Length: 181
Image (cartoon, rainbow, N blue to C red; front, side, top):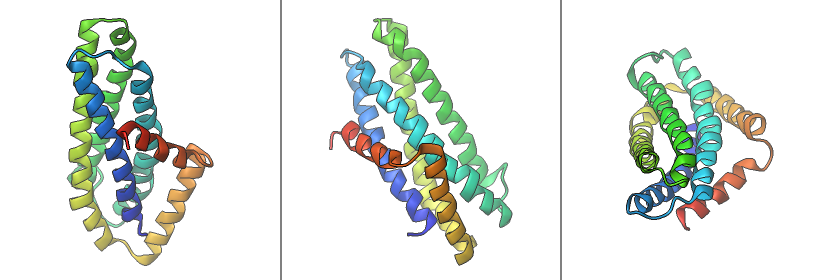
């Protein structure tokens, strides 16, 4: 697998969780109870797998190498991806902040929870589409075989150091559970 194929595979795992998050948000919006445990699992997955591990690989490894290869960091595809990562983090913070009050029955917090969950889902689906169809094909053209080898090694290091042994696999299982698969 190439580095971008690894990231695209992780996108598939993230998309499964987005399915579950959207289903949960729509159930809450329809008047259903707030499943604190499930929403907490979604937040945990996003913060640790999607952000720390996946976005960590992108921001600190792939994007850094692409900047070395002449891609601008502050605008263009990388700049947009970095802005969207930051916006995604804001949505997740809003979800985490609204959750306790939403569980307690606060109507405004329920609305904020639903809006933030659906906002995150829409943002990440669009973001993944742009990476898979615009940035990653550009990256494949710019990277050498040496770059690809270095990136794969660096990705493995991120998984070991950021998540720890076996954690990546645990999040894959959680994604299947949250997606109802």
